[in-house]
Length: 311
Ligand SMILES: [Zn+2]
Image (cartoon, rainbow, N blue to C red; front, side, top):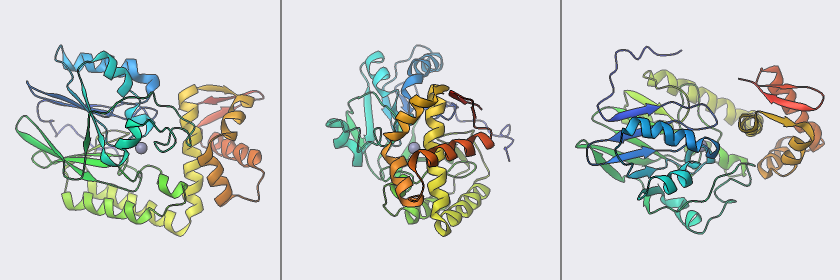
């Protein structure tokens, strides 16, 4: 499935920093006058993000952070960078701006996902069709709801590069979080995939995973996944629950079972999923079965006292 990218040379000033799954990828776009970073990873990696940036900036100051959306793995480094790269602008999607201003970890999803994001302050907003220009080449934001209702994707038409965030990955797309809250959003996923198709990007910089070029195959895979989720929403519910658990394991690497159970008790998105898709199960039993499912797919190891992240 992986693409031979040797035929593509990125235009000068564009650096794609591929991270793991706990932290989103970071994209640095700069010319002599301006350096813009798209997405900052998870907070536990903030120092590493800063070190990577210093290396790629080579003495140039970072001027602006842009967040495609405000999930903890995309803006967790904002606070650290805000205090280490002063002065810096932080631009966030307009729909979540007021909840950054009056910090609301519930609406920003950090509490219901059982994750964390250090508070930061934005200095501006981005809306559908917001633009910024670097090296005389415009990057345009587009509303891309589905995975997150306020998410943006960012397109440079000249280079054919699309920063797709979690709206399109090489093999699928991110959890459709509004659905976890009981809000219908599969149609939004489809309209965002449609938008991506219409933009006709040549290269995708996804929020997670490597750069890829075969966009039409990725769209086909994403649409087939969406079709599965539409016909069996419990499959999406199961996927979402496993993603939430795996994210915590990626963060902690090793957790005592009793501590994990306390964490899971308090994750309201897991509670919602349980209520919707497995109400006849005892909650703790349902969580245990999800963990066993993750172990079967080699995503974790479980012994008498601990759960260990693997891969
Ligand atoms: Zn996300």
